[in-house]
Length: 269
Image 1: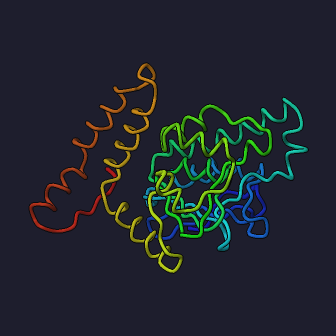
Image 2: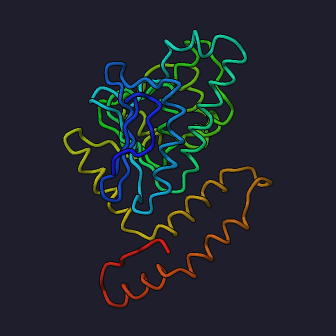
């Protein structure tokens, strides 16, 4: 599947499908895949396309080239796009929408990280379910070097992922952290050699895509509800998703496959 929606980024984003995997590619290698305002706007559109395609079971995000996943937001646009309170609010709304939609996307997401994962790149990566990086990848959130404010949802997400002390260290120092440091912080799930990264991602995504989509979706929603404040949790919705799993054809298929000692074929229904 090639991209079917008109591309508002003029090639700065690419997306396509290979089997059960949807690929979202940040395509500005000459700028280390710095994310423009138009790219932020395109992320929800691409997710909508993948979300509507029943064949797509997992979405993988990566950067073009080998030097960067995403090196951050395109700071060259800040003079125009974040010059005053009104323009900053519009820009921040696009960023918030992109990362929020990515975090709550109904299908599993994997950030495939090579090289720089800085600023907005970290915001994108931490909005994914999983982060797999190469040993030479580097991570940073340089907000304190730019004097910009970092919104509460982004801070909260990082604190929930790695804890308050490491989150403070990342923000306070604004320095670059190695992949080894990021792994020990639990900022990333795996460190994989460059020459084995694509095979690892293919195997990982393949394992997920072979499992029951309704079960995975119910768990993803449940985890998101766990991370909310207690008064904001929609436990009734979670219960409905769990009950839908037990009422599904996939549950029947899973039981039959287990008894027949074969691999199940799940159809998301």
